[in-house]
Length: 370
Image 1 (cartoon, helix red, strand yellow):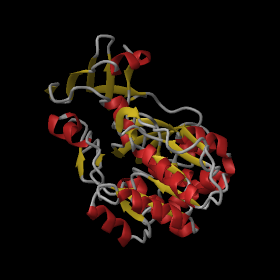
Image 2 (spheres, one colour):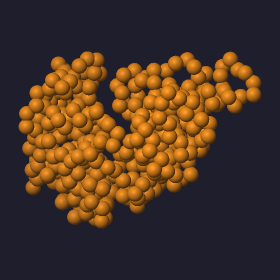
Image 3 (cartoon, helix red, strand yellow):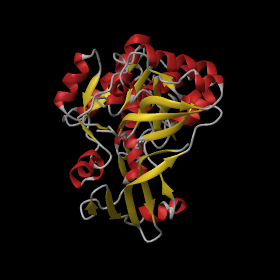
Image 4 (cartoon, one colour):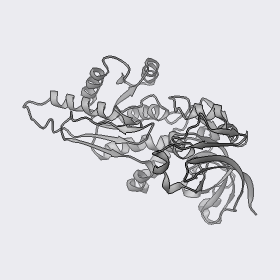
């Protein structure tokens, strides 16, 4: 017998009209390895905003209870042609209680348990999830477990990737974010060097309080000097950037090359042979990524996504990562939220214009039943 509940959907039409609305939905009974989760908490992550609002003009959108209609400007609308006309759910991750299961042993073992999950439609009162992708939370609350996947596994993924590539240090361009704070704790625990870049003095203080030894402020006049010194101290020629647009990656490569050149004993017109690598894993800035011809040819820039990494890492590594998250959910991998909203409240102008700014330390938590 189907279960009825509310769920968010986002639809982008060919003419650029974006409609996001809460609808009543019948959720099917779970089968096989599936479980039905009564969702209790789901974070709004930067990765959710791309499908939720993207680059739409939210200032001039039409808002009504449980719904907004906005215009997606070009070239962003044309760039989203593949989703035109599709009614899509949203919300990568969340947590709740398993209220029904399929007939597999793995599914039945989760009956009645509070779990975190990655259903892709977490902005909903119920969702169907694969038992293998559910993490039992034990005594932890749904709020504790709502962000137990994307940020923790991403931060751990950075460290695993660095170790696989023989690196002893990492550079991160948004150090004070929830993910950045997790990365700081992980690197301390694992003895990995870390250079954190932030934008404000209070973010410097925040990271130093949790033990970060190399924090540089991009707003300071001597930022590049600070960055060179930190890279020189740690050997961080390998970094991760969620900003995407602008000069963040360019600045990192410049500083890395300047440090590498300072260590050379002979001049080379081609620059240093020190490998320098940056990964872009987000688009907080949707503008072009600016690169300047000032760091030789020994550099690599590529994208980084969590799910492809997990597929390549292998089951043993992923299982070890998940266990580490579960064992340290309220310490190393703790998340903090600015405010809590229900499904209707998350679509108000006040909420949308606030959470789409993606300010550090101001994440929203959706509580579908509040």
